[in-house]
Image (cartoon, rainbow, N blue to C red; front, side, top):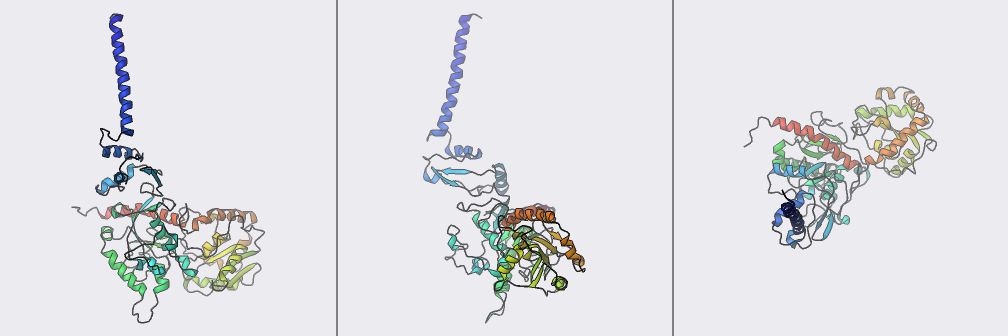
Length: 488
């Protein structure tokens, strides 16, 4: 082929390449900047969303600036779940019509998706004397002054229900910054677990006694109504209640309803007053008490030499059942050197005395009482006083995450009541070993803090993680139960 024929061919080829390049550039320009793109806007928005680029131009009309619900509720359930799984789990800064807002949480970020019943206030915050507006179910979290406080004193130790409910409510509020461990969803079919917002501990503490003209306590009435409500819900019928989460942290809460609701997942202090078929470690959650003593900071925590008391215990001494050991230990230890073993309560100056006593002691006894557990263990932890657990039947919170043997001593009850055994054991713990346990206590104490808003790895978040761990086996059992159920 001659050079004369090759030149036009090369020229035509170059023109074609340049033209294609200009066509691509102009197309991109039209996609990004034109109000009259040849691609329909709905398709363009879908392309942007699926690429997790949620930027919408300011010249969109106002009604188009509102994002669609996520996931779109008109999609089939299986498609909604699939869409959730496809979206990135990273945090998103979303811009609509030039206005930015930070999404505190969304379903793609959450470890656990929770559907919560909108029970009337008399089941939850109404028990704390909160009165909202007509038809208002929940306090306005945008105004912290509107959030009712939880009653103090011994009531506070069983306040788990309060903190978890507030955390769920705030998961849909962009103004509240909290970890995306659990988020509330409004479609129960998308939920991993169904949350029942009944303040059972408050109900028992405040409303279990009969008042004048009452034949049945408010506590019992609420439990009966709750059972009737749950049994009528499609969510309960669908799973037989196995995917429901009920908080009954006070050992005497839910006494009237627990038998009927025993298929649900309970959040408990221990299993001391439950039959094994109703509550067990396979399906239920052990949550820490909310400590009554203030948390000691690392800087203020006294070292080995600064703690003159070897062993500390202050509380009720004469108990029944498994707590009878307290009386035996009292007579063994009350006259020993560097031992404080005395009766005490939170009344008067009890809290301050216990705070000073634990903060100045090397070891703090946690002895079984009427039930295997008590808030005394968690008071010791936040006081950085090495706990000595004498409770053979105790179940401990977060034990799949925490190795308690690293910062606690465990003593069998049968050994503890042997003359000289306990003191000799504690005196054998040298300063370097004690200091190592003390350092770990300072590291893990934050896991036992209840607070609002919740913080990473605090008690609220670790409880949600424990629930998430149960979901897999719960779902496995549900699916097996459904093998021979014909779905039309």
